[in-house]
Each structure stands twice: as C-alpha cells, then as structure tokens.
Image (cartoon, rainbow, N blue to C red; front, side, top):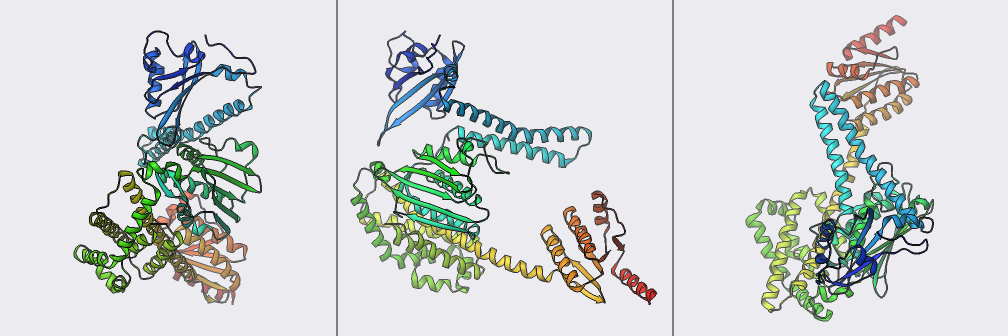
Length: 625
C-alpha cells in the first residue's frame, strides 16, 4: 500500500529516463509503486508489470498524452510525463507519480489544490452544460418526429448533433496534442502582429492602438500558425473587452534569453477570483462564448516552449505577458550549423540577383500569362496595368528582393494598399488577382532556383526551409494586406451605396392634405424593413400626416420577421396620431399573419388594392363636406 504523507510534506515517485526509455534513476517511492524488482533489464517497459500503465506510458512516449491516472492498490495515482530539452536534442524524460488521496488530505495546507479541484468542477459543469443543450434539443425533435415527421426537424437535430461534436472536438484540440503538427521555424513575430491588426482594421475606429516594438526584426521559433492564431485570439479578446473604446497597447522587447510580447487593453477587466480559471476549457466571461479560445491560446503558447501569464483589474484592464525563446538559441538547428554571417552573405547575393534580373523574369511571367491566361492579360491591358509592369517589374518579386534580408512590414503593406485599392476601384476581380499572385510566386521560385544553379551555391535542408519560410512570409503578407484593403474599399463603397439606396427606398408621397402614400416595391429583408420603419416615422412626423396608405402589392415575398416590422410601423405611427390603410396583401402574406396570430383591429384598415383605398378616402372627404 502506498503510504500517506504527513501534513507538511508529500511523498511522490520519480523516474528519470533516457529518451529511449532506459532508466537512469528512480527514487524509493517509484521503485515500490511502479518498478518491479524482477529482471535485470534497465528498460522501463521490461520492469513494469501493470499492462494499463504500460499502455498509457507508451501513449506518452508517442506524444499523444502528458498525464494519466491509474488505480494501484485501490488508490488513484496521477502520472505526469515531462520531457526536458536542451538546445539540440531531448535530454531527459521524467515521470512523476502522485497519490491523489494524499493530495486531498493536504487541502488545508495547499491552496493550489483547492483551485485545481474547483477548476476541474467548473470545467466539468461547463462541458455538461455545453453538450447537454444540443443533446436536449435533439431529444425534443426526435420526440416530435415520432408524432409528426417533418424534414425540418431532422435538419435541426442533425445541426445540434454537429454542434455537440464540434464542442467535443474543441475540447480534444486543447487536451490532446496534434498527431500531425507543422514544423517549427523561425519567423518575424512583429510582422505577424501587424498583419493581425490589419484584419481588425474596421473594429479599431474607437480604439487607440499603441505599438512599442523594440526590434521589428525580432525572430521567434515555433509553429507559426499556432502562435499566430494565439496572438489573433488575444488581440480579438482585447478589442471585444473595449466595446465603448479604449487603448490597446502591444509591446515587444528582448532580454538575454527571450522575446517578450505584452498585450494590454483598457477594457472591463477580469474579477480576481476568475483569473485562476483563465485557460480552463468552457470557462468564459462572454455571454455567447464557449470558453475554448483562451484554452487553445494557453495550449499553443506552452506547446511552443513559450510562457504566458495574465494580470487584470476590473474597470482598468487586462494584460497578457508572453515570452518565447530567442531564435539565436536555435540557430544551429535552423541554419544548418553555418554561422549567421554566411547565411546573410548568401541572401545578399540572392537579393542582388533578383534586382538585376527583375526585368527578365517579369517578361517571362508576362509571356506565361499571355500564353496560359489570356483572359487576365486582356483585362490588365484595359486597366493599363501591363505598362506599369513593363516599367517597374513584377511588384511581388520586387518586394521579395527588397525584404529578403529584413522584412519591412510597413513597406509591404503600403504597396499592397496602393494596389489593392486601385484594383477595387477598377473592378478587377479578386479571383483573378489570386491567380496573378500564385503565378508570381511560381516565377519567383524559378528565379531563386536559377540563382543557386548558376552560382553553384548549395543549401542544407534547414537552410532551404528557412529561406522558403522567409520568402513565403513576404508573399503571404502582401497577399493578406492586398486582400484586406481590397475588401475594405468594397465594403465602404457598398455601405455608401446602401445608405444612398436607403434614402431613396422610402418614398412617402403626399397625395392630399395630411394624407400620404408609401409604395413598397421589391424584396424586403429584415434590414430594409427596419430602415423603412425608422424613416417612415420621421417622415410622417415631418408631414404631420393623419392618414398613411402602405401599398405592398409590389412586394413578391415577405417573411415572418419582416411582417413583424411592418406592424411595428402601424403601431408607431398610431402613436403619432396617424391611422394606416394597408393595401395589396397577398394570400401568402395573409397566411403568414395568421401563423403569427396578428389580428386586424381598429388601428389598421385593409383594402384589396390602392385604387379602393383612394376611393374610400375621397368618399370620406365628400361626406365630411
């Protein structure tokens, strides 16, 4: 039986292993609990008799888990699997064993244990809540289907099951490492932050963004997409915490070992008793949140050898502190053992080669387009783009040549903005622009291949992947920025057009003293119905109308939400002292009104068509005279 510790110390087992599984040392607790005395082998799996432990430890060696619980002598034992790494290779593996009952006996002396148990309880409650909701809906619709089969019920039940599966997949993505992960590489973290901020451009009007980058060329090592997604989520959360505006500050600096990134907001803050739960799956302070975003952030940072901590104060704001190992600690791994000077010299030669041969490869690129994508070249000639390429060369290849030594984020984004806005103004299709981008990428790599063939320079595998990452980072930043500026311009234009259409789509026409008509023509969605309601109330007030005819004979279809908006107009103008006559109601709209339970009372008159409504008004006026 595993002995219980005193109240002031906790006994635990520890086994130190080589990466191949051979035992280096084991303390007495580990020998007594885990390792059999039988056998002379020093191989861990030959010394363990418990098959369940063997299986679970094998999963840990395969990278599929880092901890598990197994019952030994009727007591639960928690196993923690930890790899220690040096700069070049795995150094040691440590397996820790904790008796969970012994941990529980120390709760009065270990606050962290209370927090752990509380977090587990809250996480379990969150899982139960998130998964129970869709499953309850599925159960209800299955019961309805037993009584009356409707295809709609089947679709809803299927979507709710998909939602439950999606929730569980999100949980698995946090609790279980990916079997297939992208390779680690060195990348410019400041340029990634710049590209992320560009994606939030439309949400930053009321927010003051302060960037303080000590070194804009700072490189970190890790899985680029994982870290980029984590930074995206942190910046997104910071922006959402400042719904009424505020300050977003992003700082970057270095010390002797790490690259540090601090992301601060002046938002609502986080209660102190909730701080410890950040990063726990299904814990969220958002009304519509699922609590998986920060869990994935913590997992991504830590799995890339980074560190993360957070401070917050309600009403003042929140700061996330991130740190990553500097690239120099991994220089041997990523530059194939060569010195940094050799790599820079090689890149300098490549830069000169790309500049000197820019015209040649631009012509080769244009010839490829004319031969294989003549539909694009015709459009480029109409817009005058081909002449610009003849003068200045392929813009993406030029950017690669300018930035291969050091990525200048603002330069790339400025060029992308100019070209993206110009393409949007000339209605150049986005899908054709993407074809140009991909063909440009191909011609750039053809040029790089020619450089190494002609110069007879050779690259190691790691050097090649470093070069590949740098070149594609430049191209991707340009494409992302171009797309964002193109879409932003189109959205602004669309918004402007829609506002103009809104002004023209509510033509309230005075036809007699204090009598107006509102003819509604065309499809009416919820957005348009809301605009009609708002402008009708204002116009009725301005005209001091006491009678309004709303003719909807020109509306082909109206859904339930739109019908609700129309009857809100009736109620609203009644408050202004104006009565309503509704004409042109189709059979479909009448059926919708019956479904909604809308009853016609004295606040609304209906007529079959506009002519009948006008005749009634005329007869009423004659009778009064």
